Structure formats: C-alpha cells, structure tokens
Amino acid sequence: MIITFGCGSTIETRTMKPVVRAAVDAPEKFEAVAGTTLSDQACNSPLIDPRDDTEILIRSSFKQGVADYEVPNGKYGVEAGEFLRIDCATGEIRGIVRK
Image (cartoon, rainbow, N blue to C red; front, side, top):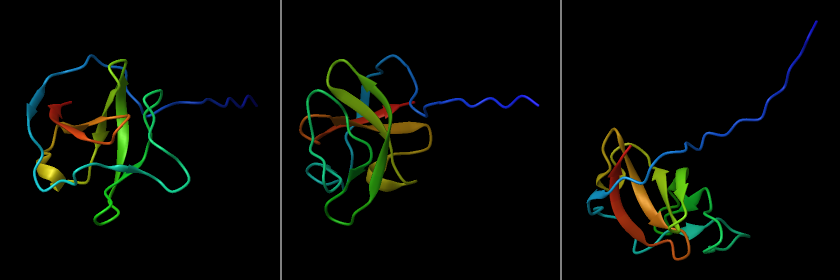
C-alpha cells in the first residue's frame, strides 16, 4: 500500500485584473485577526470586518501589496464571480474585481 501526502493551497496564481466598481456598505477598513497585525510584507487571511466580525479569505495576492478576498455571498456588493480587493498594509478596500 502506498500512501502519499501533499500540501496544497487554495490561493490561486492569477494576473491582477482591474477594479470594476466600488464596494458598498463595507467597513472603512478590514482588520487582522486578534494576535496578528497588518503588514506591507505579507497579506493576512482571514481579515475581519470590525463592525460585525465577518471573515473574508484571501484567494490571490500581488506584488503591488494588494490581495483579492472571497467574501460571503452578497456582502459589500460583491456578486458571484467576483472578489474584494484589499490593501494588505492598511486593510482599506480598493474595490471589486472579477475572478
């Protein structure tokens, strides 16, 4: 019997697509989870909406210091087939992008 173990990531490698529109009913900025801090060196996941503790999960990060996050359906004006782009150092929203 051969057993193999692998390590994978849910983070996709993709090209950075342009912002298509602004987010709606979103916090001024997202925060890192307790015990961590935002950094311009790495993008955190999950991030937290400080208003209601909604967690968003990173799906792609880019050298420009931004990352695209998956959000719960319908939150912040993000529709199916879209992500929310966040500035990794500040947690500020850049806008909505297509997957």
